[in-house]
Image 1 (spheres, rainbow, N blue to C red):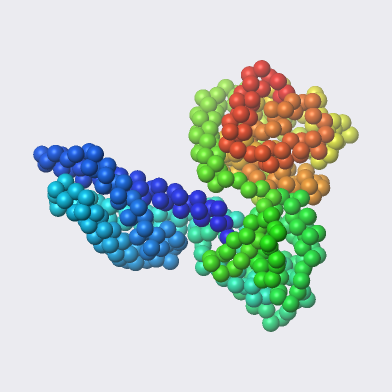
Image 2: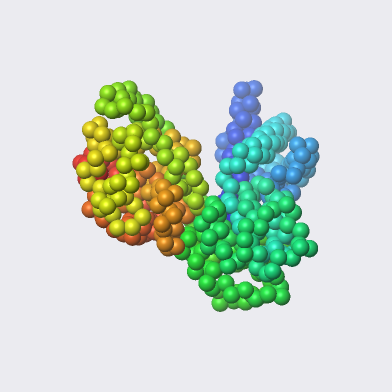
Length: 469
């Protein structure tokens, strides 16, 4: 499960360990220089280049690039002692063979000792931070298991044993007639396979995992089509499926369960990290701008009409998660009640409301909407990770309730402050299906460079007031 993330974080861990080896070597060389000993920097570089593969081999050999959640602090320290005994021995042999007169014993033991101290600090800190993040529920994926027999229960146990995977089992779905002898370990059954689409709509499901019993051949085509329309990743625990001609991804979960994955979207984890870093940087900059403009916007809103300064509304985020989206209030306080009276004047076709010269909008509201100043508080949503700088428009739960199945794939990613629709002349678009197609085009062709292009286009739209409403 989540093989892409595991590989990605392993690369991060390897890079971090290489950085620690470089830091240890720098500190060892610096200490020698301060004591009046001259060290040849080219020799130091040679030691670093030799150390990296040696330490990597033994760190991997002792499973320190696998999950360390179950390791106690004592086990981490003792494991690293073994790593450094072997790594130090191999490095000492290499130094003796290739450059016997180049380094003193003091330098060698200083370097290996610093490597041990710094790597120990890193692994202990990593274990603590990952544990704290999991307890806070960060970076979790919600799984729905279709099936209740042995394979489904084994999947549940594996997920529970590996909390560092960041997976959460929402519940089970019956394939066959409920069996009272099946022990579902306290997890609830959300329904039958015939109700799978409804279950996914009613719950924030990120992935559906099919675990059919061995004596039952499931006709998955219809379910796969429905889940693809919903934008939900599908995985299958395989026992007898022929995957030789499949164009899908085949992998093993914890080296035990073969799985076939059907991706409705498959993003590069490295680019996703860059996207999150861009979001954090952009959110901090946006909140700084918000703080500078806050007194002026607050005064104008309060002077123009009675009511709160901020307007918080429930919106639907990634995979159906509900969050509170914040804006500066641009409408009168009875706007939601009056919306029902204005539905006949809706200019949009489909599950979205838009009206030219909307009478619910205040005088100041027209200005802050035209200049997009009303959306400044959403930088707080971005900083919290509920939204992104660039994504799909966050719909209301009432809008999502009207979606056709293929519309729902637009909520399979985080919503954004801006996106394809906002920079494609949103005032001229009257058909909701067109909005959805723009969002799906963004999902299907996403890259960090596409986000950057959309951000620049957004600035152009704001400054020349093109397409705003």
